[in-house]
Length: 346
Image 1 (tube, rainbow, N blue to C red):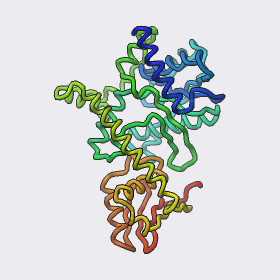
Image 2: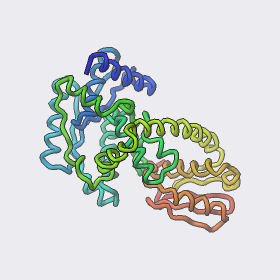
Image 3: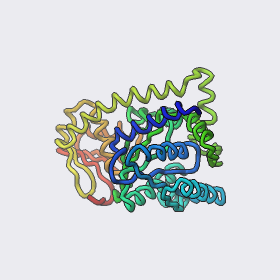
Image 4: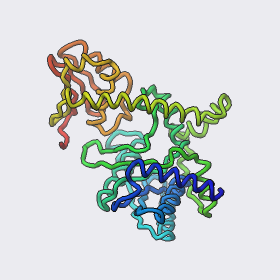
């Protein structure tokens, strides 16, 4: 990689951090580093920005407890990289298998929840402003394709956002997530690592076909390239276009939310009359926002669940729909009740 190419990547990362309000300030930025090429490239670019700004960094690495000695070696490698560049580092170990069984989640969903809980706890402990993640343009294309196959709506097809907010299902933890590499390809992160004589770790689980995303990356996208060699770029354009459309709808949802939604100890209550007067698109997105408010995200929410809830709202009092994840939607005479089976913290 040429110096000019690296400067271009550095500028892209700095611009993203600046838009998120994270480039300056007295709070450290937590950097999630797995040891792979993407997170190492992110760390390298952020480390370079330290000399140009007041950016303070803290490295975080979680051993998911799934790959035995291999994952332990990953943790040792990340710690050695942190020592070499004199950046503080926190390494921890989680138990994804136990969490998966307890909460009846997929491996991928369980790993995500355990990882974000760790990052959130650490960020709070060190007073970090946000967590920087190494998701690239390739990850974005895979995410859009995954959501497309699942029948996601606009929210899913916009893929990952440059800045988002995660909170745990019990509402006890939350964190700002920033993804500065979404405009940077995997080829570029690998080239950057090579230019800096870094030897990234490679997660063997990325080769296992039991994970849907791996099959998309290793089999589906190469197959689609036979029809469109620029399939990645096409998926990214789709993501960007739908992101603009969704932001407009989301703005409308935020405008009407305080006028029709009331929060209770068990969930949310919608003014039924005002709700039914809204455009069906706004109704659906209000329900999605309610789901996210109660469960943390909309990853497991399906199109059919939204359709069933909207049908219950229109049919009148006495209709109840189970929405999974311990949530139910009930239509009363004057209200639409969206609640969880147990109280959550306000």
